[in-house]
Each structure stands twice: as structure tokens, then as C-alpha cells.
Amino acid sequence: MHKKASCGNTGIHHVGLCVKDLAASAAFYRDVMGMKIVGGSSETEPILGATVFLSSRPDEESHEIALFTKPEFAHIALKVASLSELKAFYQRICAQRLPVKMTFNHGVSFAFYFDDPDGNMIEVYWPTGVPVRQPRVEPLDLTQSDELLLAQLTRFS
Image (cartoon, rainbow, N blue to C red; front, side, top):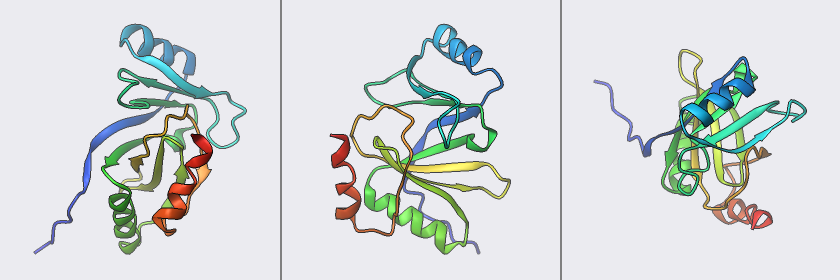
């Protein structure tokens, strides 16, 4: 019998979509869907390229939809309630020998990314409570102590 893993996440909290026309998609989610543009980057951003971040509840969620022109950044994001849960989730993924593609300090969150069996990228993140305009992508080592990880947030406050 297969042992079910304890999930530890609070659900899907945002999606990253690959779009062909960034301006048209941003206008659609803003004008038709009533969302607010809360961040973004130009095509010169060295890692992510051109992006737009949108939220219908910017006081509650830094973003609910992220639009990317680079298809490799399309993903779904699951939120966990604590740093310890994020680290436990990370350890579980590593123990399953699933390759972790990226780990980032987004300022607003700590996150790591991996693929499901079909190649769909999944982000697991913990919101830090620090309001930082997105995108922000700084390397993160989730094997560090909580103290060292949390110290990285002081530059944003």
C-alpha cells in the first residue's frame, strides 16, 4: 500500500502563465478581469525576461498571476504556512530525488521550484511578510539555519 505524504501546503495561491503578447495579456487581466498590475520587468531582466505581476487582492497576496514571455517560467505555486514547513517540504522533495530547479529569495517569499512527472513546474513558497515589488530573484540556500535565512530579509525592510 502506498503511504500518503502529509501535504503541508495551504493550496494554490498563484499561477505563472506563459503568454505570447505580454501587453495584451496584462491589459486583459487588468481591464477585463479587474486585477491590479503590482509589478513586472522588461525583457532586459537577466533571469526572467519580460514579466507582469497582477493581484486582485494586493493587500493579501503579492500576486495571483504572473505573466512570463519565457515558457520555462510557467508554474503553479503552493503556499506553506511557515519557514519550517517550507524546509520540510524541500527536504521531502530532495529525499524523493526530484531535481530542484531553482531556490529564490523573492523578498516577499522564500521559494523553490521543481517539476511534476509531466514536466509542469511547481513552486512551493513561504510568504515572509516583507512587501517587495516583484520580480526579485536572489539565490537562496534552504539548507541554512532559520536565523541565516531570516537575516537575508533585513535588506528589504
